[in-house]
Image (cartoon, rainbow, N blue to C red):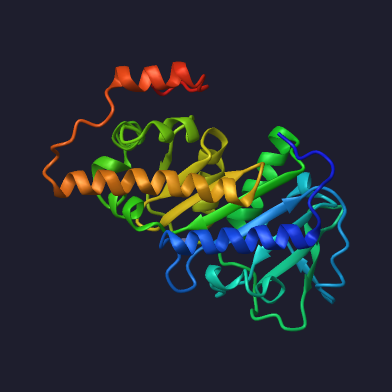
Length: 274
Ligand SMILES: [Zn+2]
């Protein structure tokens, strides 16, 4: 997928990141300053009017496929719920150099952060890998900490990908429709580590959302920030049902395999997991 003209302008993209941040907050997946959002834009945009302060930075690792592109990303320690009221103060814009290894960070005079998000390496790596594979000109990545998904990831059985998907996709027809490649799961790894970055890239090749055990999730979309956050909301809603059923003593049926197959056939869902 790629966006087609007319492309959204900078203010529309900033507003979409703000709306995404608010939606993550509404589903209670960003306590304090938890969570972060970034967007890759593959067409030229004038950013200096909103972000006039310039600073040369090295990327956390080379991103050759993002060369000459733009990354808009949340600042470290900023609250996702605060982006909408003042996007420029909470976001940085990186114009990637032609070498794909460095860039120019553009920020606003009222910038409220020192550094970019602590998960910056994972954001850059996922954007670079997706653009390399698909050639998309737009890509949104969202990290959030939805509590039911994260709670389930504390239970060893749910760290098995087949088990996790079998249990979570059974609560609503919408889940398989919106998450046709299911939910990835990674064991606990140190936040911001190279280990997590590499495993995360790998899992997001075959999924649109991955759970980082005992921490949170990362989701991506080549359409919009909203679509990425919606994926988190669908997965978290499923986890909420699973948790309710656990408390209720496992009395619910959930959708049967046959019922799920009927949904997949009726809605022409391209999936191999049902
Ligand atoms: Zn986190």
